[in-house]
Length: 141
Image 1 (cartoon, helix red, strand yellow):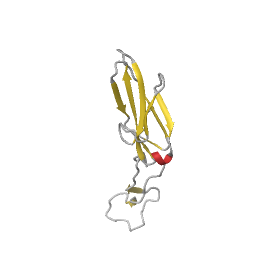
Image 2: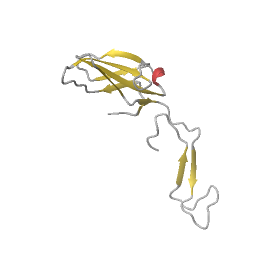
Image 3: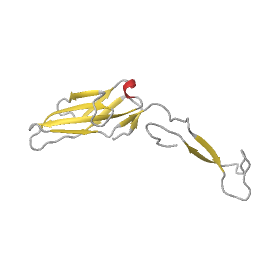
Image 4: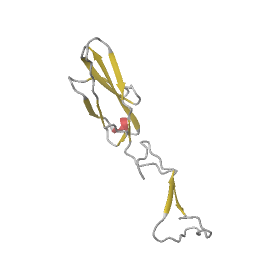
């Protein structure tokens, strides 16, 4: 599953690498703050025919950041291929409400407008909200 955001400090990636002509000699992975980056962890050899990694990192290193995993493989002919994930945003904070606004809206336009803080419908209310922000994006309201 390709996650775009998560709250945990566990970084995971999986892949499939093939070379029909010469075979794969070695694969390595790195973790960074940008595609193809290795600021968090420099390239580390992946054992055998492993096709996934999962590693816990300190929260202070990941929190409020976008994290990318880069896989680098070399075939037996000595040719390298490198690919990076599109990144996952790490946040365990609630959405920012500093600039949020919630407004009660009238149900319909009539010739008799409601007074402030009053409405004629006792069973439903219309709301409009704006200004909620989150580093990982808002999934739902």
